[in-house]
Length: 314
Image (cartoon, rainbow, N blue to C red):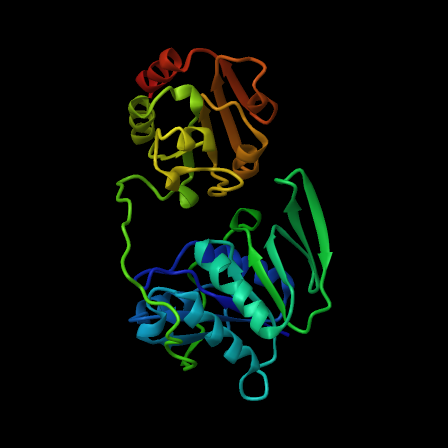
């Protein structure tokens, strides 16, 4: 049994989500092979080779894979699974990130198997647990597919060590540019704060912030804590902050050591994105707010008084 893990990376650096995905692969068992597909990814491949528990790293270095276009990456993965009489891969895993959710369903379609999405636990090699109904229920899913195609919710698995391995690195080739899509450009939000899904501390604001300008008090608090800043969907829909800050069922899933929810009522969709946080602190003037049902510490207070006071004590 061999598990193929598709690495999450930015061409220049290995994504932290890869370590969580390898952890899930270790729970399944068998050899673990990591695929690094991109352009000028020698450094990423070396980092992948050092991950504890990885037996081999496959490197597909081609301009067609530079921007993780799913129309190009999916055929590559399918070809690796099917090629040379079959490589013997029993599972194909990727992190449940924007990239993983983009190309892995196409891989499943090309292999003519079902996909199991966002697993949070491995029961056995063919049985997995995944959240449904916005995390209010956990489904146990058993697959009889010849190849299990799976996305992994990183918050469900503790990351393996990034050092300690010495896997062999092997160059591979596959279908190049499919000619169906082309990368035009991207506009990336730049911030000195940690990336939201990787941060150990997250401070989030909701509709109670009133407007986008008031988020400045959260930015100031976050800078003192070395935290990332998130938001509820209500705050994003109201135009307070950009949608890349959204935490929740339709936003980013986070599980930091500390999550501070400020002016967030705690709608079920938001809870689905943060309730696995180790410690949850809620500040809300409504003592009946649902957020207090999941909070470890709750403060019923006016956030415009409480947050500045909290910052002064830090």
